[in-house]
Image 1: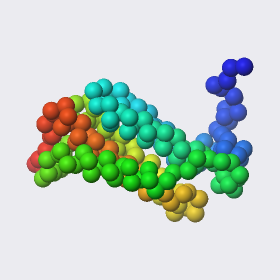
Image 2: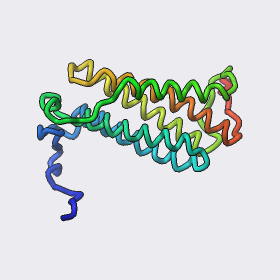
Image 3: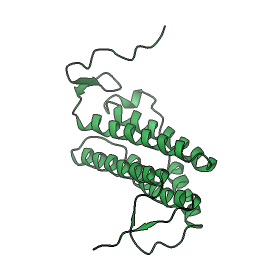
Length: 186
């Protein structure tokens, strides 16, 4: 039997968390995993634009997998998550991002000025993904401040991922031989 894409259960502005709890679609938890989903989509777009960089594309697919893990964690009713076998993030996922950042930085020139996003669609898309990642991080911090449960490693991963996306934007420009656009305040 085919899976139906519409259920009609959300027609009145409510949706279900994993575990069955119904909440408003404006709930901060829904906003958090919706923003992570948006980030995942931009990362997919970025991967499509890096058609010659197989290593970065492979890394982005790995990140997309981790973002699904984060989304599943955020979509869970925290009261029921313990019984639900949601995959976990690991410290090694963060270490991988750090290793990739360090590796890309070895070939990049020292940054001596603020740079403007642009110069190539891949560079701009990496910066958009970085901004969406920072928004996801801010929403998750707001959840934490509202005493809503969130795994601390999710915040750490999103923070490091935004750093990775910034460096990837520079690295993509370098690989594509695109000049960085310095910000020159008037």
